[in-house]
Length: 600
Image (cartoon, rainbow, N blue to C red; front, side, top):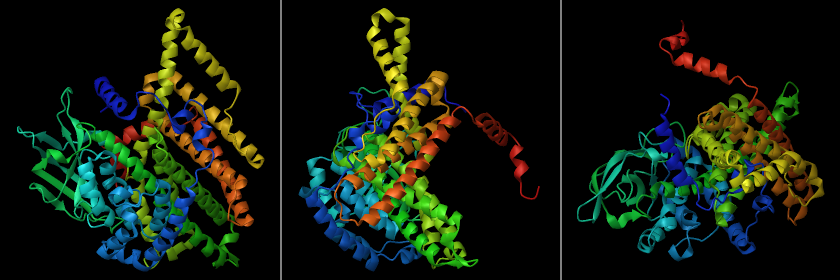
């Protein structure tokens, strides 16, 4: 049943409160929807601090040795468990507290450095990568961001050493991608010393093995008509904490302990409130940004493993008197895999840089990274299996496990369909407000000539000149000009959509998907172009042959992405949306689905 006007208005109100900043500052991704290219946000390509780079180089050597010697992905998948020996080793290496400040027992490294480490872990085993992400990127992150000094001192040193484990408990039967629909309740006792928590959580990674969980629950908030989501630090020794299912059997990432939890009149000390009362959802969304960035790094590591393995197999496996790599259909797969692995890495590093520099707005960028990386990896694993053929289907090879592990990526940390709608709606929001201001001014022109003048100047610029993409290397000028032209076309398309559909745009998900996909490719292209520009203009220890090969891969990605952007923008107006709706609605009507009864 469609939402009522009142329900939609309430959703918009909640989104406005959570997602938008009072100063209206917008980052690179949101600016794309205006047809703007914020060059300073992506150029030059970010680099590690030289001192940190030295520390990281030593750490990476230790992580690689540990992964090869101690992490057995076949055993972890078979036994559906990550051995405690592995967890202790991760703690000793410092991986479980890499970005936590040194004052609280962490290594104090940047998100960029952390991403490099997570590439190695993701390349070795997805279960271990997800475990670390649940513990470090989202489990303890709320304490770092919003914890009191006492909470930080009490928990962070032990969490960094792996002596205690963390989890993040948001998902419920009625709250998954719809994070605002949390139903778990927390009511303060009359003496004000405790909150009584009741509810259920499911699909909680580390839920049954964690020593502290960040739990989201609804609380009454003074001055608010409705209850608001608040974050609490919960420990499993609290009366009323119940593990309903410690390890839910699942398709992939079998080594992770994914739990179902229940809280029955659980008394949580008021001192365990994390952050501000009623601000838990905003904290949760901030925490998830870190998780999505780590997510991108893990996917990148797995993708690189596939590219290397598929290339080697194609080079040596002979069929019909030729190696597989001599067949054009295999060449296309290898080229696509390499190009998108490069883009995944560039996007991940840029998102990590936004976090490290304290950028005010990167929520859309991390959502774009998550969608892009998860779907690219899914295709890369699938194509790797196709190149290996039947050999890859058997469990003595890693690829069937990688396929099972990769599928959750399109669902976890926000389902990709939901994130596409999020990207599009957040992106067009400011454009819509701008257009609304112009329409209001047209009815009262004498009082708002300034609004009309600014809009007119912007329109002239947008329609006559594509935004500049200032690469330093002349060799990339053609690619830079093409990207600028695509950004211009995208800005025009967003405005045209809003003019045609106005408020209906909120419901038109066919349109939202195309806008989101085009915006994702624009962001990916900007990150890749920035990396190529740095490759050609900055000193590097890589040999020239590798430079040339990377340049070729990056240019291929830019061509693929540009073509996709053009196709998606054209499909805004030339499509089969109405017929798709007719077919889907008919299928959901009474008895129509019986057409597909097997054997009928």
